[in-house]
Every structure is written in C-alpha cells, then in structure tokens.
Image 1 (tube, rainbow over the protein chains, first blue to last red):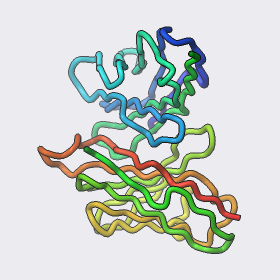
Image 2: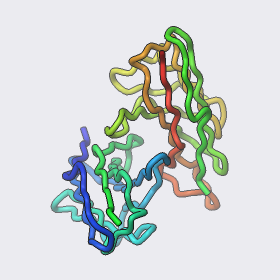
Image 3: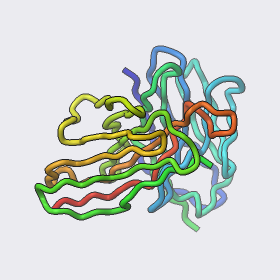
Image 4: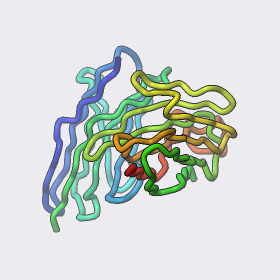
Length: 113
Length: 121
C-alpha cells in the first residue's frame, strides 16, 4: 500500500523568507506526484505535478518541486513567500497505473506580513 | 479550464434524513469521479471512486448502503448520505479526472470541487 508523509505540520515564516516543505512517499512502482494547495475557504488547487522527465518541476505562483527517486521524496520550494501563500499544502501520490490518489496529512503554512 | 462544482456548498439536516450532494465537471467530461471526506485539520480520505455508467468502488470501511453514489453522466456524479447521523457531519469533496481529449485538461490529474459542508443535527 502506498503512503505519503509530510514532515511539517505547521510552518510559520515571514514574508520574503524561503519555503521548503518535505514530502516522502512509499510505493513499490512508478509514481505520479502532485502538490495541491488549499487556500482558506477555497477548494484544492493543483500547484504542480511530476509524471516523468526533468525531476525539477515548476508550477504556478512561483513554486517548484524536485523529485529525488533515490530518496522517495518530492519536496516543494518557493524562494520568497508572500502573505497570500498562507494556506494548507498537500502532497499526493498515485501509482502510474493506479487510479487512487493518496494524500499526505498536509502542512499549514502561515506567512506573517 | 478543468472546473468542478459542487452543490450545495453547505447543508444542515436533521438526524435520520437523507442528503444529496452533486458534483459536476463544468468544462470537461470526466471518466472518473472521486468522493473524499475531510475532517478538520486532517487530510482527505478517499471514500469511493465512480465511473460513468457503472457501480462505484468503495474504500474499505465505507458503507456503500449509507453513501450512495450515482454517476449518471460524464459530467455529473451524486453522493447521497442516507439516514444521516451527527457522526456523518464532515466536509465532503469530489474530484474529477478528465476523459482523454487533446483539447481537454490533463488526464491522470484530479481536479477538485469546492466541497460541501454537511452538518447533521
């Protein structure tokens, strides 16, 4: 069974600080990897995804993530956060031949102005 | 593109009644729709997967007779919570995965609705 682990439950930082959220997964085959964001009171939105190719993936709103196969990791980064990045961030994994998406527990990011 | 809507956005009902939640893909055809439940400050838990015209596949521990899912068309799936009880109060979220189309959104990617807050008194 696949599982997803997000290391940080709650991250608090100031505007312009750099952000990195950890995500590790456990799965026995080829995976598709996703980061979703849920802004307060809004629905989940896709930030970025990795299926194959360049392991450094760029998404919307200045976010990027790097897939490191040897570490089973897919960490999310943003060099300089803004107050509007305050949200819940979810890492999700799906076997490439599977239909089921498994989510991590989520990381709450609070950006102070 | 890839917009998913849910209706209603929130509902309050009495214990013992049934509640129907609709999930629609507005600008694409969805081969598969998913229903999740999200508890406060927790992650999404997959309840069931539905494909148009066939029976839903329920996750372990989810009562199929209590959570009835109908996927009548490529753009509509409904979740009916039957004989609702206070412990069914939760945030229910649907997602849709696109039918393969060069003009449509990415396949193998789920697009999420805004969720429905159910409160059972």
